[in-house]
Amino acid sequence: MKINCVWEHNGNDSILYANNFVGAFTRGASKEEAMLKMPEEIRRYQLWLGETPPDDYDIEIVQEKESDLQIRDADSDVLFTAEERPFTAEEYQYLKSLAMKSAEDFYALYLSFPDKNKSVLPDRKTFYGPVPRTAEEMYQHTKNVNEYYFSEVGVDAENEGTIVSCRAKGFEALESIDGYLSLEPVTGSYGEQWSVRKVLRRFIWHDRIHAKAMYRMGILTFGAETIPDLFGFGRQIAMLRNNM
Image (cartoon, rainbow, N blue to C red):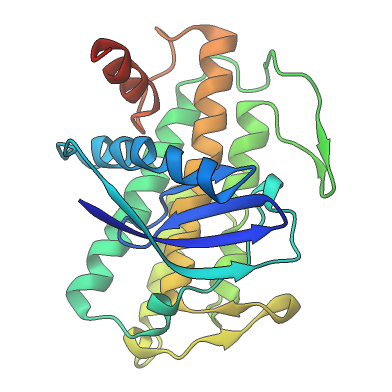
C-alpha cells in the first residue's frame, strides 16, 4: 500500500503526516526516523478503523514544509496542497464521521480513568508551558481547541460541553454556511493558512497525540487491565511481539 506523506520540519526535527490517512502522523529527530515509524502508525490507524492492515507499505513524500515552529513539541502550521480543494458531500461526511469517532473514542478513554487527576508522570514544561499530565488535563486541553480550530475558518463555535457535543455543534455551525463544501483556504491567526479539510485533519491529529499520551499514562498509573485500548496503540505492540 502506498502512503503519500507531507514532511514538516524545523532543522532535524520532523513531523510526517499521511495524506491518505487523515490525522495519522509520526515524529522523529530526522525525516528517516519519522519514515521508519510510519508503517506502524498506519497499522494502528487501520486497526482503529477496524480494517486489516496489509503486509507492506510504500512511503512517498509528496510535499515538504520548512517551519519555524517547535516541531519536537508537535507544533505545526502546514496546509497540505491536497487540503486546498473542495469536498464532495460523500467525502465530507466520511471525514466528519472520522473526526466524530475520534472525539467519541477520546471521551470514552477519558471516562475510563478511575481517578482523572492522578498520574505517575513527572512535571514537564515546554516553550508553551506545562505539559498536561493527568487525564483531566489532557482531556481539557484536547477539548478546548474546538473553538480555535473552527474559528480559523470563520465558524462560530465554543468549548462548552463534552468534546463530543462541542465538536458536533461546531460541525452543525459549519454546515449552516452556504457553500461550506467549497470554502476557499483563508489566512487565520498568526498568518497560518487554514481550510475546512485542515480543520478535520487537525482534530484527528490532535486527538491522536493526546490519546496516545493518555493511554500510556493510564497503563503506567492504573494498569493495562483498567484502561481500554480504543485507538489500537497497545494492540499494535502486541501484534508486533507476536510476529517476532
